[in-house]
Length: 362
Image 1 (cartoon, rainbow, N blue to C red):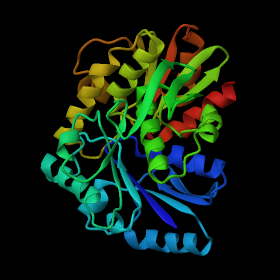
Image 2 (image 1 turned 180 degrees about the vertical axis):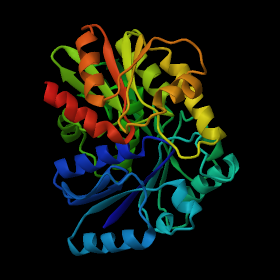
Image 3 (image 1 turned 135 degrees about the vertical axis):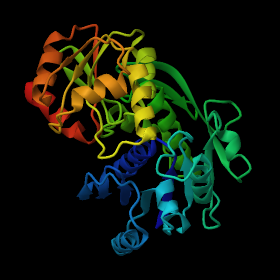
């Protein structure tokens, strides 16, 4: 059984899902260990895991089951938190480990930015890893370029090159290994994830680009830039909050305007520290790009509106309406959405509730 490791600040689960679903599509036996849950051969072992990386002893037991069941490939998300807790997951004999990206700002669970970086480097420098993949256009590429690696990305200099021909709300138009294809995945975020997934498959010599061309037309990534269509109206659900800039700027480029409205609720913490307050404020900077915000409250927290006004928007004026329940917010927002507008939902772990709500409306 071959092991595929995926690490990075964001995009791990999306890359893992693309690789996992493709391998199933072409007939391999495959398991997946990611923040969406634990899966094997299209079946669910455990859902809504949200820890990203299992503890080593627990993962070892699952991998033993995989070997007994003749699984061909096991895909594992590897977080820096796993290294921080002195676990052994990153020391497994990975055939390839790919880095999606690196953002120093996501260091709140670490002693410092340098500590976060050192944990990521330990994943990529394990002597048990056979191949390392880095994105050539990654802004922090130089922090890892001393590590022996292959590259992927959009550049002619990349070992594995993906070209983006078009980027629209109905999907990406791409070219890889001389073959043009389209995918339902949207925005430059998923173009980057697609480049990483293709590089992994190419590195392992298991990519049939013509089969991938057919497969890519309908990929289901749970909760990240997930697009729903209700009538003629576009809805995009995303579980990221810190990635508000990534979503809203990417969507603006994709749809070619700022005609989007937003359903938003804060992530609640018992004791918010300065990092959390700064992150909320940063999210607020990008929420202002929307035409209107429907503030709602999946957890019934009484301080939701107060957090939004003070911590997220820094007491600056913004067009918003507070709607207590998720179901009401979805119905009102959809009713008021024009056909040239896009509704964006920052959902965190509640994205399945939002998805279910719109499916019921539809």
